[in-house]
Length: 397
Ligand SMILES: *Cc1c(COP(=O)(O)O)cnc(C)c1O
Image (cartoon, rainbow, N blue to C red; front, top):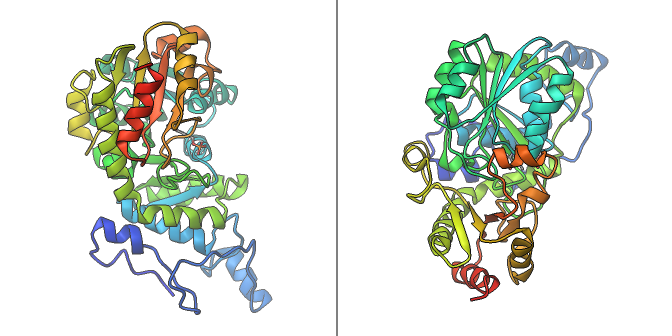
């Protein structure tokens, strides 16, 4: 049975619940979990045709799987993209999108405010394969202009970035990147597919860690690569994924399908509470600085308003005093958990300098604004008054 939800003019909330659903002959209500590695053939000739690509069908779950396909189809409808590949993790999506783009001798230009593992891939791993990487201050257009004055194969950025929430002018950078011949890959994890549509702002590829808001309940790892460049998606990217094997488990795909059903409701509530927490923390005793794109004090407040539909689910702040003081605050939280995940129903607090970004040299960390007193708070779905109470108590109020 073919899924025809793309042809229906359903609105986004409906697509999140029903898009991509492909029922089996058992007519199940809920999407089926096809826990199968392989598929059988009626005849040897059919197997031959399948491997030649003459007959489109499932061959092996490293290539494709019915549950994974439903997740990919729903993500396509959500993002407004022609192509989607799901991966086992967000990092698999980041690495595959870059590895299927750059060749030895090519240049990659990336913003330097990146998630720790993205930083590793750009700054350390790809150069070992002969890729020349240039890192720029993502919020300074002149640095992009300089770096992109030579032919470049790929541009990579996070906006807002993890954790300092720099907001990058996507259309402006995309234009410079395209003039340099680059494919623009945007890690849209912090904005979520609900708040920002990079493909509409000039990006060529959007990647997600589905582990974050798409699951949203801290259960399953996953990632996606979305693009309108079908030739690349069905060519180099498909070959890379098929033969290197970062495929998503059907079970995890099913968890993400369930996550998508409530994504817009959860993200809107996360944003509402995050905004309230940001206002609550700004100017508070013991707090040096609050970073949230929805606060007028954020350096790219106007740009964020233009580029994003709301300000995000994460609030960062710097405490007064040293690291010991910051640890004391984190340890004093009673409800909010210390963790390194984000986008979860539970409020989670992270100390990036000693966890997600501990690999960076101390100078490199300071260069991207990750001080020893910076705290990242992923605002959860608890009653916001309980979140505020916990923060105030940990501040000694
Ligand atoms: C978490 C995260 C990733 C990596 O995703 P995983 O699913 O943990 O592999 C990549 N980019 C950003 C911005 C992230 O927050």
